[in-house]
Amino acid sequence: MPQHQPTLMEPILSYNNGNGNNSDYDVMNWFEDLSQNAGFVQTQLLCQILEQNYGVEYLKKWLGSYNILEMDACALESLFSSVVPLASHADFEPFMQRIADGDTTPLLTQQPITTLSLSSGTTEGRQKFVPFTRHSAQTTLQIFTLAAAYRSRVYPIREGGRVLEFIYSSNRFKTKGGLTVGTATTHYYASEEFKIKQHKTKSFTCSPQEVISGGDYKQSTYCHLLLGLYFSDQVEFITSAFIYSMVQAFTTFEELWREICNDIRDGTLSSRIKSSKMRKAALDIISPSPNLASKLEDSCKELEGVDWFGLIPKLWPNAKYVYSIMTGSMQPYLKKLRHYANGLPLVSAEYGSTESWIGVNVDPSLPPEDVTFAVVPTFSYFEFIPLHRHEKKLSSGGDDFMEDKPIPLSQIKVGQEYEVVLTTSRDCTGAG
Image: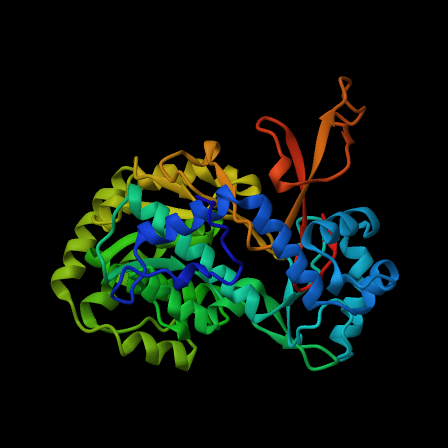
């Protein structure tokens, strides 16, 4: 029988178990199907990106003389790889500035751009503008749904349980051209997809939107801790976008636990919380709980005597794991988090960038140092530049690499080191 070739219009959330709900099996089966046909899926995705963005100003220089709408998929992929050069953000910056200033002509994409994300600044030491579209929020929902399925296979959680999420929306601002600018996570937490995620993954955050989007880190952290402890018996796992947010929150708790316990006992909220919206949202949830407060106080006194070792399982006894980005520059925080976790599994979150999600953690049982990510071939068109180390070290002590020409996802080899190149629907170019 001919092998089924998945189409790009088969979204992860279209699978259901017959009663309208996604099962973990369906979601993982979708991904396994895609992975087995990754080369085909990637070729089709690139064609879709180029056809949808045919005529944008950036691509005219290289593809303007070709009728790409009449080309077959393989020929178009070959043409793209041979004539469109790799680019960095510096190549896009003049276009991004024009977009920020209000230029609505199709410069990088045919999709309307009304929102810009700020990158983390880790690549070139400064933040950059990156287009944020509905597709951005949708792929975030998809990877969270896929990742939750793999986690649930190893660490099953109760349906309808709570999640203690140390997540924060920063303040957004407008560009000269009226576009909204903020971090990618800020845009996502404000999106409809963030609400959908809770229902799809059957886990509901302890904190309301007013706490997440409060705009004041200290006030939001206090409320996250307060509400997380108020729902302590219901919390199934604890998470943050980056591990350092979690470590900082627990360090803060060491100083504020008495105040938090008093608020739980009396159903009140500390005067530290100045935001009227945040105050109202938190006070609408909590009510006086003297028994819970006494139990938490006893636990905290015990924990103080052991330098807060095992804080997480002691205060959240039903938590199955801790989940966050723990790789790369986040690794130095692992030692402190392990101190708080006392053996509770640490699960590394997904691999991505501001431009695109890249891979999902397919084996959550592995420690963060050994995490394995599998590329999701529907998110972007991926190419990989093989890196070969010189035998001699640089005088600076760093590694020197020789680079080969980029190759497609279907040709990568186990054990080879690569630099990832992305082509997305938002800026249809090869960008490392």
